[in-house]
Image (cartoon, rainbow, N blue to C red; front, side, top):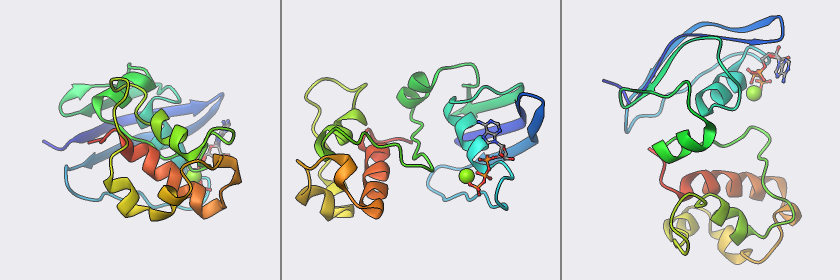
Length: 153
Ligand SMILES: Nc1ncnc2c1ncn2[C@@H]1O[C@H](COP(=O)(O)OP(=O)(O)OP(=O)(O)O)[C@@H](O)[C@H]1O
Ligand SMILES: [Mg+2]
């Protein structure tokens, strides 16, 4: 079975039917891509997978476990990572604190994985800088690193 299975998911914003019977499966160790024109619902689908917006019907399973009724923080603990389209880093926290936010559900004092700084060396140079003072692309690196920090599946 795939790591992630999405079956017949429907989602609405008010009266607007955004996701219509969406089906998707994603296997461990593979890259799965969702393509579509602007406004078609890609971000809405990802937010639904993370639990940031509720779905009206359908199921989402991770490793065979239904997750569609769980909260975002529960999904994070189950191994779902999320990089928001708008980055949503914490502008007044430092780069280091932003990365620690990605480890929030781990034991206190869990170190930031060193391989993040191999992927994104600029973050190491800027550990003490405020997130809001990074360039757009550097913030994007930070958002990805924050999502990877806890080792999502
Ligand atoms: N919070 C919201 N409330 C109401 N409608 C919304 C909301 N967010 C998105 N929409 C609408 O839902 C539809 C899907 O938006 P979504 O952001 O999922 O598209 P997308 O595929 O990610 O687009 P893009 O490629 O531009 O990022 C659009 O028609 C959009 O206007
Ligand atoms: Mg989008």
